[in-house]
Image (cartoon, rainbow, N blue to C red):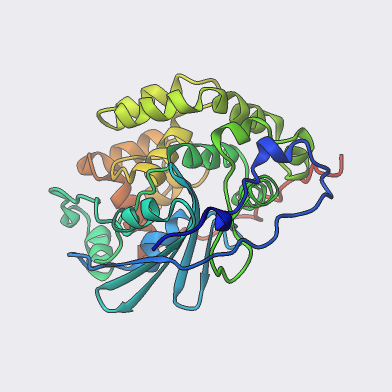
Length: 337
């Protein structure tokens, strides 16, 4: 299927948006035209929602939403923006339809998004009864990958040292204000993130109004200035440790941010987000019945070296949670200051 040039939605990322009034006109809904479609039949059990929706940044994510049985994903591919609609039509049959200039790229990544590249290797769930039970009950949980390194890196930076509610809200606002309207018959208005250049030109008022702290916004802008070379270096890295060396060499990026990038963009089955506020406590409680620190978590996960993210994912699926001991952290709102 082809789409005429007149139907390609005009660019609306931060590089052009920065010069407009914040109350200026919004892009009209793009003419979505006819989609390209494909069918994917995984060779492994697949829990489509729990695999793909791991990539979503909260329920209000403008890049990923669910409507009925369909998962919608708006992305900025190397060939331009694309909207991908995914649904399971029959057990073991996944249908994908894509719109926009990047639709062919998006369709080509459908299997990876569904965990086709997830290699379980010699993973041995029997090392712990809770992991064995969770693995038996959840055979369809796979580790997905988007192959969109910079988008994953930016989202991880926005999530540094804040609550999930703050981070998801900031992502939603900045992407909606400064991204590009996604093509296709989406159930709600959806947006692809800005280009790497666009992230450099997000207006200062947008960061502030989004509720993001200056350290995060400055790190995004600084990282975007080297974005293309960083992405090339990450893709050329031989393993997760090499990816860490590339990313952690940048100011404002530490092991947690690098691990989150590896998980989302590369589907790394061994990445562990050291420094997470809750993760070590959750792993420790699930595997031993009591909390541990990061070092203790790494010791507990060591028997599954190479598959530690898989163990973490299974702990999440097990339903085992430590009872909350106090009130939830109330996020500060700096937008009115």
